[in-house]
Length: 323
Ligand code: G4F
Image (tube, rainbow, N blue to C red; front, side, top):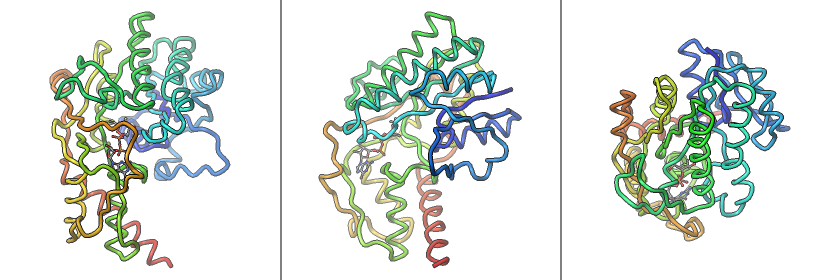
C-alpha cells in the first residue's frame, strides 16, 4: 500500500507516517520548499519516507505529487491550523485551509480517482455550539476565519463524494495534543512553560482565557482513527473525541501539580491572548466511531499531561546541560 500525506511535517503527519510505516506502507509526504528545511518531527523516520515538494496553493504541484506517489490513500492534513492567525491572515487561511482542499480533491479526481481521501476536519466547525455534546449531525457555527475555512473543507469533501463517487471521508477531530504539538497551542505552551519555570528558566506563564473548555485527546490515538476511516467498506464522516472536557485552568493546574508547583503562583491571564470571538466549550460524542470503527482513545488526559511535561523537562534539561 502507498500513502500520500500533506502536512507530513506536522504533529499529526509525523504520527500518521509512523503508523503507516509500521503497517508496511510506502509513505510519501508533501512538504513546502523552504530555505531552512529541518522537519524535526520526522528526523527519526526521515530515511524511511519520501518527501515531495508541493504546495496546497499550487494546483500543478499537487498533480505532480500524486503522479509521483501513485497513492492508494491520501491524507490531507496540511492547513493554516492556528486559530488566532486566521484573524490576522484570513485570506491566506482560506487559501490553504479551504480552497486548498478543493485543489487537492481536483488533483485526486484527475490523477488518482481510485485513491481513498481523508480530510482533516475540525471541532472548531462547531464553534458557538448548537448542541452538547457535538456529533456528526450537529449543525456548524464556526467562530473564526479558520473555523469557516474548515467548514468549506468539510463540505467540499462531502460534495466530491456525492458528485464524483470518490471514497472521500471527513474526520471531525477534537483537540489532540502530544509532545510534538506546536508551542503556540495552549497545551504545549503550558507544558513548555511549566518545564521552564521548574528549571528556573522562566518566572511566569502568560495565558489568555483560562475558562475555555476543550475535549483534549492524545494525537497518537487520533491518527489511528484516520487510518481506520479509510479501511471501512463505505466512506463516511466521523467525530473523534474523548467525551470529556476540561478547562484551560484545569490543564494548567494538573501540569503544574505534576512537578510539585501551584499554577496560581505563576499563571497570569493576559488580555493580549484573548480572541475576538471565543469558542467556550467543545465536547465530542464519538459513539459512531466507537461502534463502526471500533476506535477508542487509549491515553488518558492525566497521562497525556504527564507525557508532555516530562518530555519538555527532558528537552530543556538537555539544552541546559549542553551550555
Ligand atoms: O490550543 P488552542 O490554540 O487550540 P484551538 O483554538 O482549540 O484549536 C486547535 O484545535 C482545533 C480542534 O478543535 C484544531 F482544529 C485547530 O487547528 C487547533 O489544533 O486553544 C485552546 C483554547 C482556546 O479557547 C484559547 O482561547 O485555549 C485558550 N487559550 C487560553 N490561553 C489559549 C491561551 N490558547 C492559546 N493558543 N494560547 C494561550 O495563551
